[in-house]
Image (cartoon, rainbow, N blue to C red; front, side, top):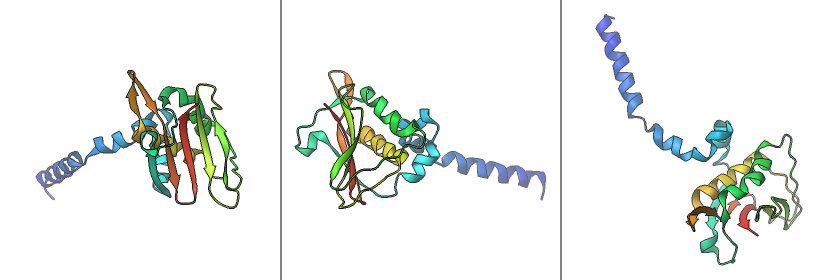
Amino acid sequence: MTPFKYIFAFLSLALIALATPIAEKAEVLSDLQSDGYNTTLSSLAPRNKDGVHCCKDNGRGWKYAPVKNFDRARNDLFFTPNLKIKIGPRGCGATFGGCDAGTVVEICNDNNYAISPDAKYLYSYTVDIVRQCTMTIGGVPQVCGQNFDTDKYNIIMRGC
């Protein structure tokens, strides 16, 4: 192969790479960039998720709360080593935040048996809720929503 063919082949590949929409992928993971686990969460995300419902649409009267007030609860889910979560049958057995900052993250089980979902996977549900349900109220980004799993459990983020 002549040097010109090598150069042409390289430039062709470079043009193809430039045409790939990298920005769209980065935007999807924007909430995860600071935690350093993008690959892990993005590979888990599509597993069994069944839909996010924002509080403004669910008719339950749950309160919106500032997104930053959920940080401690979300960080507990993501960063606590070997976190074991067990939720008994037919109830909301695990809560994070406990209304300390006026917010709570609840994990609810609709099954007739106990479940133990992965904490980091549950964190990814909060990412979805923040991404889809955040609205600016009084100049402050606030969130309230519920994310369902096909395995009959769900995550709720709401104000207290």
